[in-house]
Length: 258
Image (tube, rainbow, N blue to C red):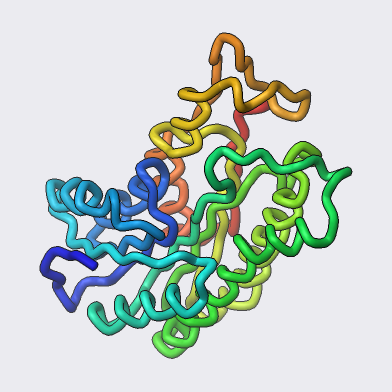
């Protein structure tokens, strides 16, 4: 773990699954309005660069190593952050859904084991993490839970197979949390994303290894010429902030596929 010097009186936003695209844009967006930021990812390899970027912007930050799929590790990281900061005021959950460029099988090929794996990797960790931070938010009568989800949660995308099911479950979890918590001063919401996010790892993987990603009628991408429709992570992060700040709706959707 590495960090800049914290100011105990400032509020803290935790970014789970931080990467160079949306995760860092979320960190900068909340930092810009005065939040200290705690970054969490499963490797410390890029933490020094992340912290330097935030420090250059005058944002207090710390970085922590934890894999959301390791329950004890991620909960211990949250304990460390809460111990250092005094509270976790906003939690953003956005770990990557695909490892190493692996392409999921079609929904017609998905079996119960594949669905369990998808839920294990995305949904069950979210439930554990929320269960850890929510009691403190309820006690204070304030807080926010933000989730990043895929377009397959609202648009049928058979090519994503079991990932479509876990994406839908995560979206439903966020919306149902908001319904349960809104009268207690706590916001929950989701940014539903359909498109490659600029500067992100998946976008980098796609553009550097296009042969690994075949064309498919479900996704409007011209692989041969790399006419890839993309999303600006800063715009997504601003939308996430507006969801939390305005609290007038539980979801915003970005869809570059038409």
